[in-house]
Amino acid sequence: MKWMSFKHEGKEKYGFYLAEKQAVAAVSDIDGAPITLAAAIEEGQFLASVCRNPESVPSVEEASIEWLAPIPRPLKNVMCVGKNYRDHAIEMGGEASVPEHPMIFTKAPTAVSAHGAPIPAYDSLTDSLDYEGELAVIIGRKGKEIAREEAFDYVFGYTVLNDITARDLQSRHKQFFIGKSLDGSCPIGPWIVSKDEIADPHNLAIQTIVNGEIRQQSNTSHFIFPIDEVIHVLSKGMTLEPGDIIATGTPAGVGFAMEPKGTLQKGDTIEITVEGVGTLSNTVQE
Image 1 (tube, one colour):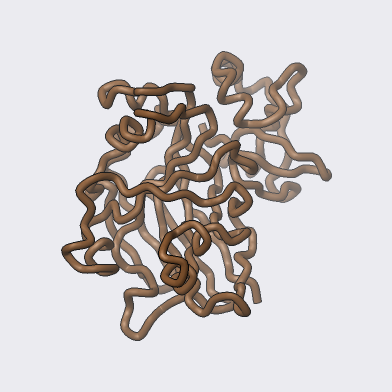
Image 2 (cartoon, rainbow, N blue to C red):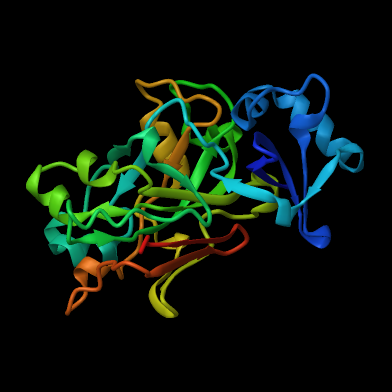
């Protein structure tokens, strides 16, 4: 199923997408439903019961909703794997910058925004706003010290993420957090595809298009550190919880590495497609 959060008639809700009906099943309207999608993920039996009887869920027309990020207000920072494609590591710093261990940074929860939401230009703050198309993993079960062979037991599903980055701030402050945590700099969506619909998350085509031009084109088979290893490493000393978001890294083709540079301008539209998951589209605010 494609699980999503949305706003309808001024109220935040969640449910699953009904493509054939151009509608959304409003699971949160069921009596006794958990308040948020993250809470429903934590109560796994509730969503399992919904999956057994999806026709009973009331629906609303897609045209009547406002998209929200699937997890609109994550409890933790979004966890991100840096330089997880060899070609991207090389384009940003040469062969010496290819990491030997997973390189983890985070984006603030206030950076999270939705499919279709405008990306603030921040033109008084940065002149190097860039895109990074990524597959993101949504954690479904609480766990710590998770073994690699059990890692996928803790995955709820997958979504698409755009790791918008102010490259000059990233360089100026000698770390990633400020340049990657501007409000609205983490579009996620449009939905979370449940893991049972993805046969192999390590063999998915990923593509980023800016204003109709293909900028990034790769496959998750090129991860340096696969998803199970990342979950294992993160959980060694930190508890992972339902609704936690892990961005798995971006391939080569970012605007900052182009010659001349292809960083984002007002009005630019970025479309990121991950095979089997969906397309996330956002435009830089005019």
